[in-house]
Length: 375
Ligand code: AMP
Image (cartoon, rainbow, N blue to C red):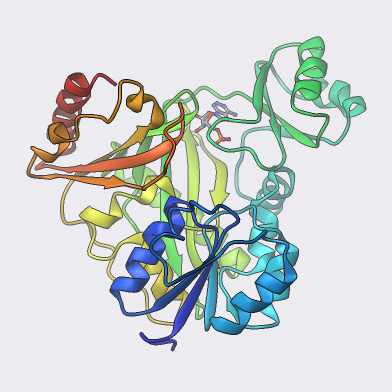
């Protein structure tokens, strides 16, 4: 076990790295953040911020020498860099997990191989593949870049071959997946933590609502049947077992009107849809990340209150600093701001968790806050 007093490293210093750092510091660990951004939200509060590229071997060596264990806060850390660090200290999750999650083609192919359902898709490596890919799938479709896409970025709706050629070029002539646009009744996600010994704990299922492809709200418990909850929980656990995963894992699902459950994507780290755990669960997803990377047993995942998490995007800064008192006046609302210097439209700047006696009551409080704040 790696115990308090030891030094933990995190690759990436955005809001997920910041909340990891807060959890680790609270528990008595030192934290070193590697992130090229001089204004990295996690770098500001960590014991040390190594400001360098994720491919800078001297910087990686420094991080590896200083740390007892290293984790990541985003999938797109080069897997080679993680392999380099694996020579120096414990890295969790490992490079292999990142390699799968950072490429949609690899991810979906792997899910198919282990027998887990995804929306019908075809890989597109070059424009010449589009004709075949399109002929095997029913429109409408989405063309998504295989890597580096997030929050609905890097994806274009396609209904014809001409559309597909134009979209492939717009996306930069880079490998993509062409995927059937499925009818969505709802979207849910499962967050779990799995230790090196295979011991797994699974948080209550969250129901996710999006605006413009960006997560807007997570409602917990999700408004789904116990059977559906057991099914998604079972699939997420199977997936983690198949990877022999070690760390915090998020699995996003599409639920179709005819009861189908399809895996949209996986994230090998804490997830935006797990932010509710910070205020509504016995152990937050970030504390869990610390515990698992340190070889400690996972903490209790029980929910102590219904909760609604709402993201705060840069758009609401358009008229100046938002009226935070609207949220802070609510005794069971918890405000989290990430300390980002620049508020841009669509940029995740913070979130708030609203606890209440029921999810309906929490949604009512959120609606009132939104109306007053105008978003
Ligand atoms: P992604 O970046 O792939 O997670 O997509 C962002 C959001 O776009 C998802 O959470 C869905 O709301 C929507 N979306 C993505 N793929 C599909 C699809 N195949 N069918 C319907 N909606 C989708």
